[in-house]
Amino acid sequence: MSTGMGNRGNGPEAGSAREAARPTARHSAAGVRAARPARLPGTLTILRTMISNPIEGWPPEVYEAPLLRSSQVGRPCLFVMAPELVHEALVEKADIFVKDKVMRRTLGPALGEGILTSNGAHWRWQRRLAAPVFRHDRVMGMVPAMIRAAEATAERWAGQQDQRVDVAHEMMRTTFDVIAETMLSGAPDMDVERVAEAITDSLDSIGWPLALSLLGAPKWMPYPGSRRAAAGREYLRGCMQAAIDARRAASGVGRDADLTSLMLEAADPETGQQMTDEQIIDNLLTFIAAGHETTALALTWSFWLLSQYPKAAARLRAEVEAVAPNGVTPENIDQLVFTRQVLQEAMRLYPPAAVIVRSATEDTTLGAEPVLKGEALIFPIHAIHRHRTLWEQPDAFNPDHFAPEAVKARPRHALMPFGGGPRICIGMMFAILEGVAILATLARRFAPEPEIPMTPEPQLRITLRPRGGMPMRLKPSGDAGV
Picture 1 (cartoon, rainbow, N blue to C red):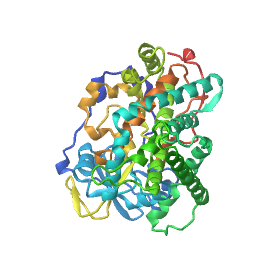
Picture 2: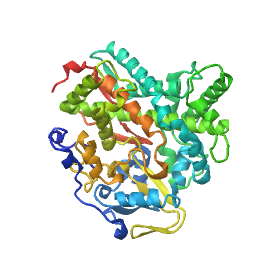
Picture 3: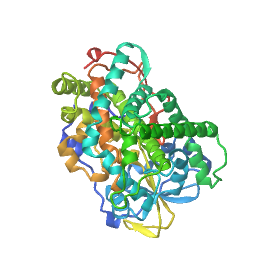
Picture 4: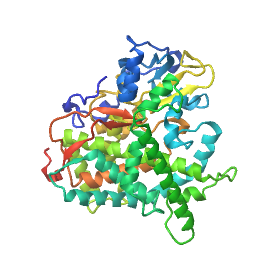
C-alpha cells in the first residue's frame, strides 16, 4: 500500500484540470466478478492490524481491482472499489446492504443508537427529523461562529511564533470551539478541554472492541483501555444531559438557537414524533465526535500538504488576499474556490472517514458476484481515493482534481469522503464551510512547517489520524518559500 505522496513535481503546478480528471479505466458493473488477493494474512495478523491500524491489513489489490473477495477472521467479505458497484450497493440496494452489526457493536457504546449507527425505520425517522437542522440557511448562520473560532486560534498562534505545536491538537481545539458555540451554547460552563479529552478516551481504543466483535467475544469482555473508554462515555453523556437541561430551562428567554435547542424543538414532519433526551444525546455525541474530529483532521492534513507544496500554499494565500482582504465572511466564503479545492484534495488523499462497512440482509448480487446473507461489504475509501484505475498519479497532491471540468469528468463515487447514497453525511455542508473558514483564516497568516522532513503515517482509529500527531513549527506566511 502506498501512503506516500509520490513525486512532488506532480503537484498542482504540473498538469491541467483535464489531466487531473482523466481516469485510466472504467468498469461496467453488470459483468464484474471479484478478484482474489494473491495472499491472505493469518488470523493473528488480521487481529493485530485491526487493533493497531486496520488499513495496514487491507490486501494491496484494493488499490487496483474493482472488486475483491477476501475474508476477515473466517468471515467472508467483499472489498468494493468500482464506482458503479459502490452506487449499486449504497444507492440502488441501500435497503439490502445495511450498517454492519460488527461496526454497530463497536461504535454503539460510544454513540448509542443515533443517526450514524441505527438502521431501518429507526434511522429514517431520525434522519427526517435532523435534516432541517442542517438546512442551508441554518448552516450559513453558523459561519460567523466558525470564523470566530479560527480567529481565536490565529490570535493564540500569534503569540507562539516559531514555536513547536501539534497541529492536529490545535485543529481539534479549534473545531471543538465551533461545536461548543453552535451545538452546546446552552452549557457555557462546560469544560471544553475535558470534553475533548473524554471524546478521545471513548474512541481511542476502538480497535479492541472491533477485533473482539470479529472473534464473537461477549460484549462484557474487558480490553486495554476499556475502563478509560467507559469513564469517557459516562462523562460525555452527563455533559450532554446538562446541555439539554440548560437549554430547556432557557427556553423563551431570547437565547440564539443552537443544535441542542433545534433538536429539542424538532418533530418528524410525517408523524410529529420528537426525540427523547436519550436519542438527542446519542445524536449530539455523533455530531460532536464525528463532526469535530473529521474536520479537524482534514485541516491537519491540509496544513501538512501545503507545507510540502509551497506553490499551492502561495496560490491559496493569494486567493484569500484577493477575495477576503479584511477576513472571511459569510458573504465571501463561497468565493474561496481554491481554498475549498485544497481541503477537498486533502480529504481525497487522507479521508477522515476512511472506510464504510455494510452487511447483506438477504442473498443478492453485486455486479455479477453473488453475495450471501450476512456477508460483509467493505468500501475502503482510502483505497478508492488512490485507486490506480480512477486517478492519474493517485498519490500526488493536486487540488485541480476539484476544478469544475475535472469533477464533471469523474465517476460520482470515485470520491466519497462523506459516504454515499441516502446515508451520505448529513453535516457535509457544515464540515466544508467550517474547513474553508478555518483554513483560509489561518493559512493567510501562518505557514506551519515540519521540524524535520517527514511523511506522517495515517492511522485508522474510526477516523484517519496522523500517528503521533502532527508536530510542526509555526512560521508566519511571509517566511514560506515559493
